[in-house]
Structures are given as structure tokens and as C-alpha cells.
Length: 383
Figure 1 (spheres, rainbow, N blue to C red):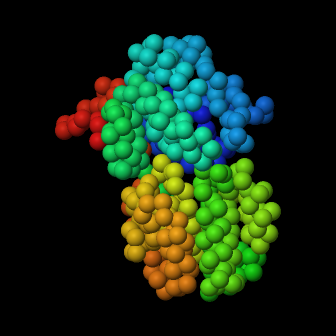
Figure 2 (cartoon, rainbow, N blue to C red; figure 1 turned 90 degrees about the vertical axis):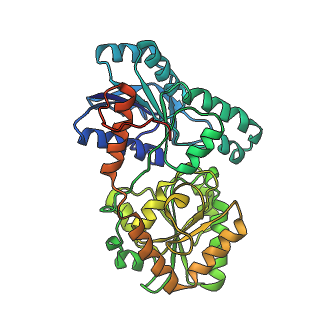
Figure 3 (cartoon, one colour; figure 1 turned 180 degrees about the horizontal axis):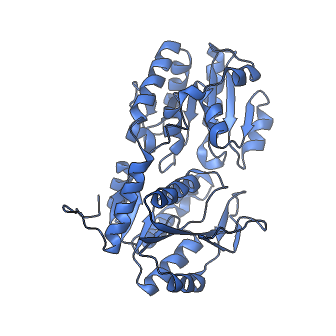
């Protein structure tokens, strides 16, 4: 089969959407399919690979380091007329995604879309909460033009169905447990941080931006320090809020951007992962922490609701109760035996989440919308 993937974000950009899309692309290739990628040009030095089409781009306002692709309907029509895909997957709802939808409609190519980001909730984080209903309406208008809207959790699927999104398909995510593994814990790296094996290292890993609610992570750590003055806080990632956080908290250990095995080493060398975001669609880092044997405190939605069992494999805090989140962080920071047992349970809980299965599920969705599915007991797409 020939598939096309259209996305506004893609590595070397580092965020959950970019890495998820790349994983889906690689999974389809492993299954023997011909996959092309349409994405924004990320810099003047950015050069396309043979399977890529790069389009003009500009920086997203108030979001440094992220770009959006310019509308490219005519270019995509010509591209897909020359090499027609059996199906198109549009990962993002930006200008490039909308133009891809128009091009596919004009050519009669079936489309699946990915719901990766709660842009409606982001409006609150950026001070324009009054736009939240409009943002949701805008996303519904986009996704209802596709034949399947793919979501990572049952909770999100239920929400979108209630909000009159059509053809919602739940497709679970996975984590690379070979890369994210407790065995990557490195005593030498911890020694560089000034801690021994029995000391406590708290971590945050992800994009360092306003929508991540990072002030709560700072508050939680300061409460931990009241009980464990020797605790350290490691920040892994980059983003527009990093400089301000580092300046206000000079005792924090700033790792910056880490990738691949080095990222896995830094992550596994910590003891408690705090994930204070209120607005994640999924939160891949929760699975990565669990796979790394790092006990996690997160709010009870997204990946945490799907895979983390409160009191068994970590702490999943209900609602948006920041005080309860802080209390959970302090409890796990001060109970070494409980935290270590939860870390072991967390690793076991995600051990069977295989990327190969995600690729197979994604392939099935694209085959179904393209009319090529030949399963003996085919079920409707909608979850």
C-alpha cells in the first residue's frame, strides 16, 4: 500500500506529536508499505529525504521552536496525482493539515486524522480561555471531514463522541521498553548531580512551556525539600519557559534537550517523575517514565488514566486538585520502599505495550478507510 502522512511537527523537533508521528511512519515502513511524509521546512538548512515533501513554514506565535506549514493545496494535488496514495493520515489541524484535507477531498483520497492536542484547553493556558468553545468547534469541523479520527485513550474517545465528533477510533499507544529501561540507571551520572544511590532525584521531562502547568511542579518540589532537604530536581527538555524557571531556581539541574539512549539514561537515573499538566491529550512521557522504572505522579487522565494504577504503579490524582498532587509527591518522596515497589509495578504494567502492535492497528485503520481491509470479522471503525 502507498500512504501519505501530513504533519506540522516532525523530528528533529522534540514533542510528543512529532515522535508519535515518526513512530507511526516507521511502523508502516516496517510492515512493508510505501510511506511519504509532508511537513514544514524547519530551517533554511533543512533538506528533504527522498520520501519527504517540505513546504514553506513560519514560527508559531508565542511558541518558540515550533513552526506551522503554509497551505499547499495545489502542491499536494500535483504530488498525489503523480503518486496517488491509497490513504492519507493528517496528524495536525494547522494550515498545512487543512490544505491536505482539501487536496485529498478533491482527488477522492480517503483521510484519517489524528487528535493529538487539546488546543481548546490550551486557550486557558495562554490567557484566551474565552476562545475555548470556538477552538473545539474548529477542530470538530476539521476532523468530521475525515473517515476516522484516531485518539489514544478511551476517555478522549468518549469526550469527542459526546461533542459530536464522528467516526472516532481508539488506538492505544506503546512505549519502546528496550530504550526506556531501568537498566540504564547510571550511578556515575547521579554522582555528577551530587547524589548517591539512596538520595532522591525528582524529574520533569517534556516541553517546558506554559500549558504544562510547571509552576505546580516547582511548588511540589519545594514541599518535598521540606522533608528531604538533600533532594535534587532534574529538568529534561527545552521550551519557552526554561530560562525563567532556571533563573528563578538556580539549584535545579538543567539537562536541556536529550535524545535517544542519552535521554533514557538521564530519565532512568531519577527516582520520582512529576507530570503536572492539566491538558495533555495523552502524555507519552508517562509511559516512558513507567518503562524506565521511575515512579510517576500525574493527574488521572490521558496515559495515566489508561495505564497507571493509583497506589499500585504510581499516583494518579483525580480532578485538577493541585494540593492533592503536591501531597502525593511528598508521600512518595518520603517513602522509599513504597516508591521502589511502585516503580517495579510500573515497569511491569507497560511491558506488553509493543510498538509493533500500534503499527498493526494503524495499518488496519488505513486499510479499512481505503477499502482494502479483508478481515473476516471486520468491525465498524468507530470506537
